[in-house]
Image 1 (cartoon, one colour):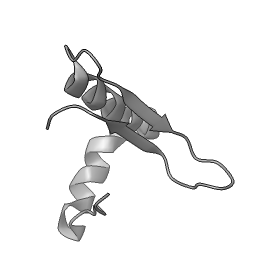
Image 2 (cartoon, helix red, strand yellow; image 1 turned 180 degrees about the horizontal axis):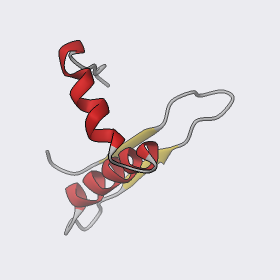
Image 3 (tube, one colour; image 1 turned 135 degrees about the vertical axis):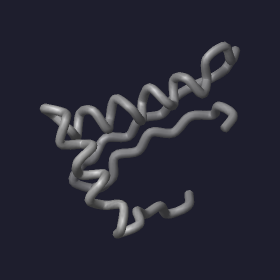
Image 4 (cartoon, one colour; image 1 turned 60 degrees about the vertical axis):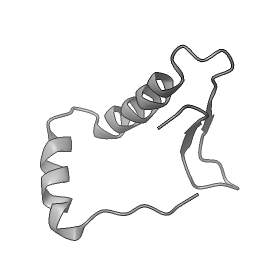
Length: 68
């Protein structure tokens, strides 16, 4: 998996966009999951894997086998 980041110049804009949501973390999670579901729409064997953080894994991961 490739590491992703954010341009520090765009960070303020991102924070302003997220400030419009009452629960910004939930909005981000919904967006990731919605994008994954959209990517597999219509696929016979499409699937979405979601891994929640735990004591052994600090990362939240959404992965799909769709195109794009």
